[in-house]
Amino acid sequence: MESFNHTLPGIFYLLGLTTVPHLQVIGFLGFVMMYILTLVGNCLLLITVKTSPTLHTPMYFFLSNLSIIDICLSSSIVPVLLMNTLYKNKSISVEGCVVQMFCYLGFGAAECILLAFMAYDRFVAICRPLHYSSIMNMRVCVILVLIPWIVSFINSYIQTYITWTLPFCRTHHINYFFCDVPPLLRMSCRDPWLNEISMYVASAIIVSGSFFLTLVSYVYIISTILRINTSRGRSAGFSTCTSHLTVVTLYFGTLMSVYLQPPSYHSLEKDKVVSVLYTVVTPMLNPIIYSIRNKEVKICIKKNIKKIVKLSKCSDVSCC
View 1 (cartoon, helix red, strand yellow):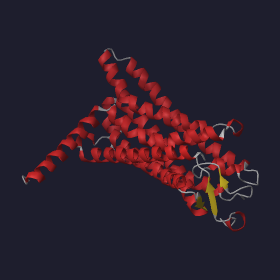
View 2 (tube, rainbow, N blue to C red):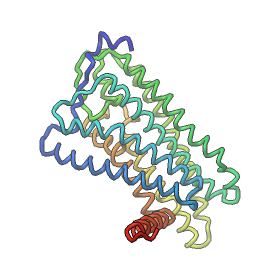
View 3 (cartoon, helix red, strand yellow):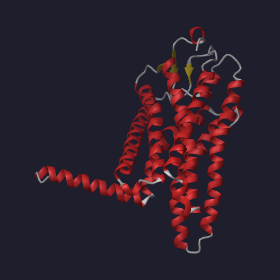
């Protein structure tokens, strides 16, 4: 960090997604709505799992942690994006940029690894149903939840540190809507080949490794489901995995298109759109996908709403 004194002015400028005024207004309103839905949806899911004993299972334990990660991931990006869209001053301090990059990389990688462990959980539930409770005991679940946090934030520290040791002398205007590694590497006046190698190696290990574990799990899951004799059994098997598979496809697809493509294939405008998908849209969709396609969650949400309505009526008529 000593290089800050002679290579950085203390402030960067995030140019955002667009400079067209009417598109900025539309974007601001859209991002506000998506952020509200992200907070409400994930908090509702957390409360539902917490207050419903029937949901105290490994699957919903992982899902609760996914909701926490989604809230943190979205909160590390969207508030800054909204402020830069609303105000003419689009500056961000070096310290703010460092913190945003560290948090984004950490939460993003944690979600990636956690989704792979959730696929493993579905594998055990479908392919080893008789041994599920012994394999996925609370100790194992806690370990599987801690691993994404530890691994992702170690990687985040390394990537953030080596990025901010680069000298930035070309420009201090970041042509992006948040502080990410690829746009900052383009601003370096020194060849960032070591940083690029580090980024691709980390992405290959975390993203590709998680994707491979997910893929292997689903190969076994699908082969097991197809061996079920009854159509109702096959339908029930697929229904337990559809929500997770939808989330995995959306998240891994967008993530790989940004971090595992060679620099020559990168398009800045395309990267911006794809980044919006996995930093803003996916955290909003996750609780919706899991709630809409999950009967247990919908039943528990309805029960909680009925309890709240009943309590409110009781308080109104002083019956409690």
